[in-house]
Image (cartoon, rainbow, N blue to C red; front, side, top):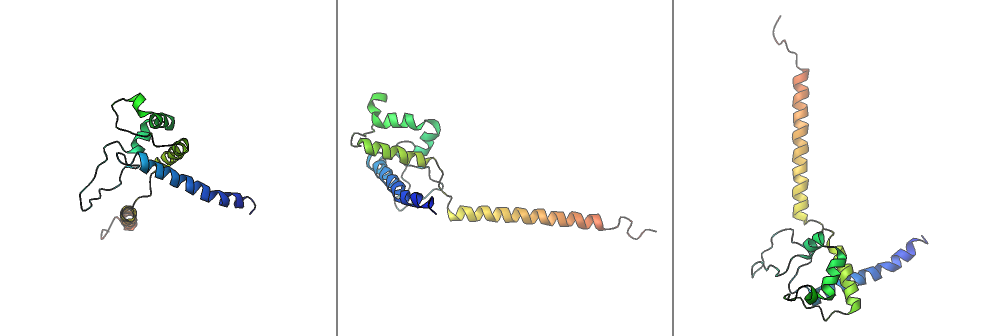
Length: 149
Protein backbone atom coordinates (compact mmCIF):
# COMPACT_ATOMS: atom_id res chain seq x y z
CA UNK A 1 0.00 0.00 0.00
CA UNK A 2 2.89 2.34 0.79
CA UNK A 3 4.25 1.91 -2.73
CA UNK A 4 0.88 2.63 -4.27
CA UNK A 5 0.39 6.03 -2.62
CA UNK A 6 3.20 7.83 -4.55
CA UNK A 7 1.86 6.42 -7.82
CA UNK A 8 -1.62 7.65 -7.02
CA UNK A 9 -0.22 11.07 -6.22
CA UNK A 10 1.53 11.19 -9.61
CA UNK A 11 -1.62 10.45 -11.64
CA UNK A 12 -2.92 14.04 -11.66
CA UNK A 13 0.53 15.30 -12.67
CA UNK A 14 0.73 12.87 -15.58
CA UNK A 15 -2.83 13.67 -16.63
CA UNK A 16 -2.20 17.41 -16.50
CA UNK A 17 1.02 17.00 -18.53
CA UNK A 18 -0.98 15.08 -21.14
CA UNK A 19 -3.61 17.82 -21.20
CA UNK A 20 -0.96 20.56 -21.45
CA UNK A 21 0.61 18.73 -24.39
CA UNK A 22 -2.74 18.42 -26.12
CA UNK A 23 -3.43 22.12 -25.56
CA UNK A 24 -0.01 22.96 -27.05
CA UNK A 25 -0.77 20.70 -30.04
CA UNK A 26 -4.13 22.40 -30.55
CA UNK A 27 -2.48 25.81 -30.24
CA UNK A 28 0.33 25.30 -32.74
CA UNK A 29 -0.37 22.23 -34.87
CA UNK A 30 -4.07 21.36 -35.07
CA UNK A 31 -4.82 23.88 -37.79
CA UNK A 32 -2.95 21.69 -40.28
CA UNK A 33 -2.37 18.33 -38.56
CA UNK A 34 -4.39 15.68 -36.80
CA UNK A 35 -2.81 13.67 -34.02
CA UNK A 36 -4.01 10.24 -35.18
CA UNK A 37 -5.12 8.74 -38.45
CA UNK A 38 -8.89 8.19 -38.25
CA UNK A 39 -9.85 4.54 -37.86
CA UNK A 40 -13.06 4.97 -39.82
CA UNK A 41 -14.38 7.53 -42.27
CA UNK A 42 -16.66 9.92 -40.45
CA UNK A 43 -18.72 12.23 -42.56
CA UNK A 44 -20.10 15.22 -40.73
CA UNK A 45 -22.70 17.70 -41.90
CA UNK A 46 -20.05 19.63 -43.83
CA UNK A 47 -18.31 16.56 -45.23
CA UNK A 48 -14.88 15.19 -44.39
CA UNK A 49 -12.15 17.71 -43.53
CA UNK A 50 -8.77 16.33 -44.39
CA UNK A 51 -5.74 17.88 -42.72
CA UNK A 52 -3.33 19.93 -44.80
CA UNK A 53 -0.31 18.34 -43.13
CA UNK A 54 0.38 14.67 -42.45
CA UNK A 55 -1.14 12.78 -39.54
CA UNK A 56 1.29 12.94 -36.63
CA UNK A 57 1.13 9.23 -35.83
CA UNK A 58 2.31 8.51 -39.39
CA UNK A 59 5.12 11.06 -39.07
CA UNK A 60 6.28 9.44 -35.83
CA UNK A 61 6.46 6.05 -37.53
CA UNK A 62 9.06 7.49 -39.93
CA UNK A 63 10.84 10.05 -37.74
CA UNK A 64 12.15 9.92 -34.20
CA UNK A 65 10.73 12.10 -31.47
CA UNK A 66 14.00 14.07 -31.43
CA UNK A 67 13.68 14.85 -35.15
CA UNK A 68 10.08 15.99 -34.67
CA UNK A 69 11.12 18.14 -31.71
CA UNK A 70 13.86 19.74 -33.82
CA UNK A 71 11.28 20.50 -36.49
CA UNK A 72 8.86 22.02 -33.97
CA UNK A 73 11.60 24.20 -32.44
CA UNK A 74 12.58 25.73 -35.78
CA UNK A 75 10.58 24.54 -38.79
CA UNK A 76 11.71 27.43 -41.02
CA UNK A 77 15.38 26.54 -40.61
CA UNK A 78 14.69 23.03 -41.92
CA UNK A 79 12.23 24.03 -44.66
CA UNK A 80 11.96 27.76 -45.40
CA UNK A 81 8.75 27.26 -47.41
CA UNK A 82 6.80 25.61 -44.60
CA UNK A 83 3.65 27.14 -43.17
CA UNK A 84 4.29 25.74 -39.68
CA UNK A 85 4.31 28.49 -37.11
CA UNK A 86 5.41 27.31 -33.69
CA UNK A 87 6.82 30.60 -32.43
CA UNK A 88 4.04 30.94 -29.85
CA UNK A 89 5.17 27.83 -27.95
CA UNK A 90 7.26 28.32 -24.83
CA UNK A 91 9.97 25.86 -23.75
CA UNK A 92 7.55 24.21 -21.27
CA UNK A 93 4.90 23.88 -23.96
CA UNK A 94 7.47 22.27 -26.27
CA UNK A 95 8.23 19.71 -23.56
CA UNK A 96 4.52 19.06 -23.03
CA UNK A 97 3.95 18.80 -26.79
CA UNK A 98 6.78 16.29 -27.11
CA UNK A 99 5.26 14.24 -24.30
CA UNK A 100 1.85 14.35 -25.96
CA UNK A 101 3.28 13.30 -29.32
CA UNK A 102 5.03 10.34 -27.68
CA UNK A 103 1.60 9.03 -26.66
CA UNK A 104 0.12 9.56 -30.12
CA UNK A 105 1.95 6.56 -31.56
CA UNK A 106 -0.02 4.25 -29.28
CA UNK A 107 -3.09 3.33 -31.32
CA UNK A 108 -6.42 4.25 -29.80
CA UNK A 109 -8.81 1.48 -28.85
CA UNK A 110 -10.97 0.50 -31.81
CA UNK A 111 -14.56 1.69 -31.86
CA UNK A 112 -17.20 -0.53 -30.26
CA UNK A 113 -18.62 -1.46 -33.66
CA UNK A 114 -15.24 -2.73 -34.85
CA UNK A 115 -14.72 -4.76 -31.66
CA UNK A 116 -18.17 -6.35 -32.00
CA UNK A 117 -17.55 -7.18 -35.66
CA UNK A 118 -14.24 -8.84 -34.78
CA UNK A 119 -15.91 -10.81 -31.99
CA UNK A 120 -18.66 -11.97 -34.36
CA UNK A 121 -16.13 -13.14 -36.96
CA UNK A 122 -14.23 -15.07 -34.28
CA UNK A 123 -17.42 -16.75 -33.06
CA UNK A 124 -18.44 -17.76 -36.60
CA UNK A 125 -14.97 -19.17 -37.25
CA UNK A 126 -15.06 -21.17 -34.01
CA UNK A 127 -18.53 -22.51 -34.81
CA UNK A 128 -17.46 -23.63 -38.30
CA UNK A 129 -14.39 -25.38 -36.90
CA UNK A 130 -16.52 -27.09 -34.24
CA UNK A 131 -19.10 -28.23 -36.83
CA UNK A 132 -16.36 -29.55 -39.10
CA UNK A 133 -14.80 -31.51 -36.22
CA UNK A 134 -18.21 -33.01 -35.35
CA UNK A 135 -18.81 -34.03 -38.97
CA UNK A 136 -15.38 -35.68 -39.18
CA UNK A 137 -15.94 -37.54 -35.90
CA UNK A 138 -19.35 -38.70 -37.06
CA UNK A 139 -17.91 -39.94 -40.38
CA UNK A 140 -15.10 -41.74 -38.56
CA UNK A 141 -17.48 -43.55 -36.19
CA UNK A 142 -19.82 -44.91 -38.89
CA UNK A 143 -19.04 -48.47 -40.00
CA UNK A 144 -17.58 -48.78 -43.50
CA UNK A 145 -19.40 -51.97 -44.49
CA UNK A 146 -22.98 -50.79 -44.19
CA UNK A 147 -25.41 -53.52 -45.21
CA UNK A 148 -22.69 -55.83 -46.63
CA UNK A 149 -22.20 -59.35 -45.36
